[in-house]
Amino acid sequence: MISKVSAATARHRHVVVLFGLLVAGVNAAAVGFAPSLAQVLFTPLLLLALAAVVLSVVFVGIRPASFVVLPQVPAFATPAPAWKVFFALGFLGPASASVGALVRSAREGMVSTLDLGFTISWLALVALLVVEAWRGHEVQLRPDGIRHRWVLGSLTVPWEALPTAHVAPRADRPTRLRMTFAEPLLVRRRGLPWSWNAVRTDSVDARFLAAAIRHYVGHPEHRAAIGSQAEYRRLLADLADRQA
Image (tube, rainbow, N blue to C red; front, side, top):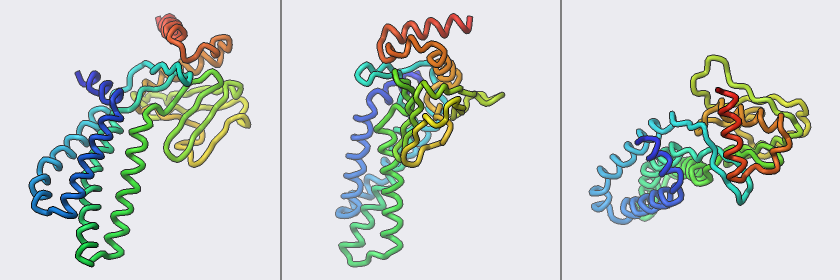
């Protein structure tokens, strides 16, 4: 049941995020212009925010051994992390209340530098969380290599760099997959990569991702078909045979 809810949230994450932004906008307007309405909304919105945070903690442990097939890219992508959607929703409530309070203070001519700095910090944090939740797929296997993106940067590893993926020993559900490269000069990093030599695995089984990377490093003849349903079925069958 939990896995199905997580998958549905990830699949419809744009709708969920837009609904959260709408509710946050209503709350900010209420706090800024209608304090009596804000008092009525306070308790249900607080409960919703707490529920969202709790769900994010529950969903963070769901890491399926599967990819999402993106033929339009083309790529095999790690599933969108549903926990990020709920984590962002949990922060939208306090952020909207902060914005509303700033608006109310501005209307009363009582805006302080501290209030302004606090609100801007909230908005910057929530903006990062919302963009991360909206983007969804973090790691993609493409015909030309591996791409890991997050809101402030990216890591691109062509297959010619011959990446080797390492799962930490005794790690039950690691949140990152470290890589070494036979040709490190081919690796491209832009912005502020989440890690110089690792990709995130907080939404996918790390060993499954490592096995897929090893497969395409060792079988260049299959890379061109990455992103197709037929190749995905062939990949799953091959990985299952190796584990048997």
